[in-house]
Length: 339
Picture 1 (cartoon, helix red, strand yellow):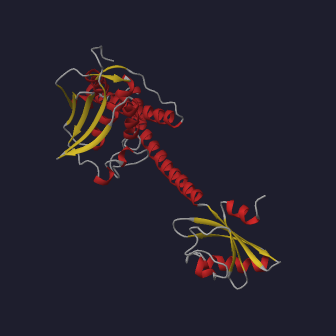
Picture 2 (cartoon, rainbow, N blue to C red; picture 1 turned 30 degrees about the vertical axis):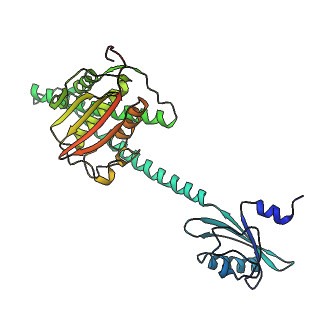
Picture 3 (tube, helix red, strand yellow; picture 1 turned 135 degrees about the vertical axis):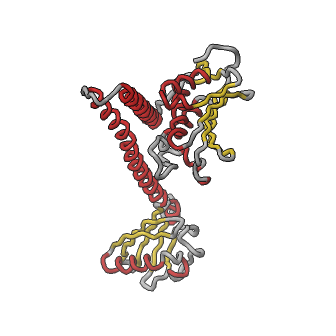
């Protein structure tokens, strides 16, 4: 049967006893982040323990001597300990149990950050949904009421703007659904032939008047393998990002290397700060503070998730005055129809 010392040594907590002169009497281990030197019987408290803990420990011992038990925390920077002090009567000692709760502290901090990020994300999404929805409802009400002051060009302009706003709404909803599926582990992609130029053309056509100002350059027919609907979602997010945060001219260039089809969306906007070139692909990160609302907070993140699921990559770079987002998907091994 193990001795008491062997049992105590096997415990994860650091356990010591201290007499009324604040001298160490027992310790269940000689290595602990709490110690500034190896604990030895008879050593004074301040000689053994980390300097940041001495005051707290002495206070807990004093409380335990008066009330038989006390609890507190010792933070040494790298580690955080929950401390329990109990008074022993025979002999007159104070038992101190130090439980390392650093992981709990870090987990709580991570949860707090996540809650903060999600609250910010939800606020942004609410704004993004409200803005185009309000425009659609406003135009619909005007068009539903007969008004002799609305001539045909004005009606056409309203319908065009309604189409643009509805396109934004559809994209936001699609992104949010993809995020939800990702978080519950149900986001899937199919693997079928994808004609890059044909799918880009579908997205641009759905953009209405905004799409007419986007130039597409494709020197060859590029057939990749992926999910056509998800590929179009990536294209839509990249074009929406360029239209909202970039500047014209906006161009789409389609090419291929030996293994992948390549889609590059380019614009003449100011780009993002250098320290955010990777952070813009993180969930809930907003790289365009103070700019017009767009789907940067989730659109780029979900687009990278989708290209990765399809076996490709999504990245960002600056080429002089030009912002470039580059998405890839694997090439089809042989000839085949577009998706």
